[in-house]
Image (cartoon, rainbow, N blue to C red; front, top):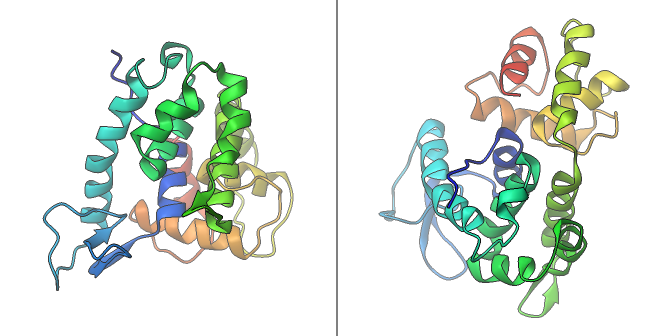
Length: 222
C-alpha cells in the first residue's frame, strides 16, 4: 500500500466546502463538532484557534488518505496522479469509505470521473451543495497536474500583480487555480470568499486582496 498525502489543491477544496467553525457546535446528528468537522474529544463550550483547526483537519484527513491509498477501496490507486488522488480524498472525506469503494469498483479513471456527480443526495434528495462539491471534485480529478507548473510560470511573468474583487483576465485564472477555485478569470464574490479562506488558512491577513505576500505564499504552495 502506498503512503501518498493530499496536496494543497485537495486541501483547499475540502476547506472550501466543509467550512470552519472555531467554537464547538452540535451537528444535525447532535454530535459536538468543531473546526472542519472534527468530533474527537470535542465538548460543549470548547474553542480553538485557526491553527488548531488546520491541525485537526490534517489529522482527520489521514484516515481518508489511507483509504485512497488502499487498492481494496481504489483498485487503480497506483495509477492516480496527484489531482486525482486529492479529489478522491475529498470525496471520501465527505461521502465515507463505503461510497469511495462503490465509486471506484470496476471503473477506470474516466469512468470514475463520470460517476462522481451521482453522489449528490442526502436522504434521497439532491442537495445543491453536494452537487457543487461533486462538480469541484470532478474538475480537480480531470485537471492535468501540469497545470500547476504552468500557473507558477505565468504568475512569475505577471510579477505578482495585485488583484482583487472586480479584477479580470489570465492573472485571475492563475490565482483561481492556486486556490482551487473555478478558473473563469473573473474575480467575483466567490473568488474573494475563497481567497479570504485561503489567506486565513495560511496565516495571512484575510482581506481578499491578492498582493505580494499572498502571491509569494501561493507560489510556494504549488
